[in-house]
Amino acid sequence: MGGSDDDYMAFLNKANEDPSQGTTAAKAQTQGADTVGGGEKDPFRATQDGVEVPAVLRRVCGGGAGEAVVFYVSDADEPFAAVALAWDEAGRGLPDEEEFAGLIGHWDPKNAEVEILDPVDWDSNGQYKEVVDAVRAAGEGNDVRVYRVSRGGVRVEYWVVTTEGRGKGAKLVGAKALAIES
Image 1 (cartoon, rainbow, N blue to C red):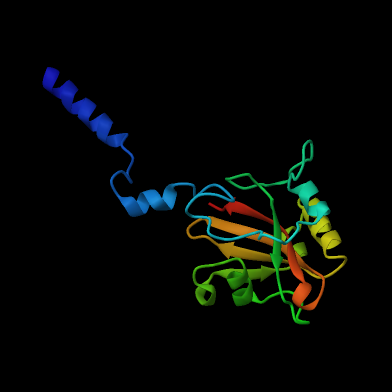
Image 2 (tube, one colour; image 1 turned 60 degrees about the vertical axis):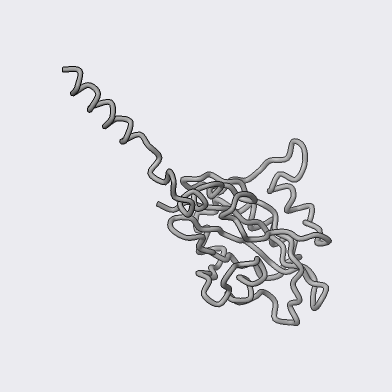
């Protein structure tokens, strides 16, 4: 009976192996993919040097000791991260899908899966009212949009943003969160 025990153990060991073991592409795809702001799979930039995050956004994104952090509820339950990027809005206000993809550093802006949503449609139950209100306050009443950006598979990011300022000195400010939609 010793032979069947060995066979059974070999079967169990095989069943418990990491299916991506030995495949570099699969490892690169899974390492750090669940984290916002880190890992190989998070190439999108949310902030840049010299562009200050408004204080009202730091409060909802946990910018200081003792400040509450708002989480986007999904299979990942990720916190919102602050967004502050230079944006020459040239009188147009918020960017279109392709401009937005380029602004966040998407590797293929023309073919990026970006969808623009109205904040009311995105948050019909008012679950993220605190985030939307903070973004609206940061933009001093300017339009607020939600950009849904696919990261492949079930991973998407929601960017709740507005403009602050006008022309060349304008900024795109807001908050973003990773969601796992299974």
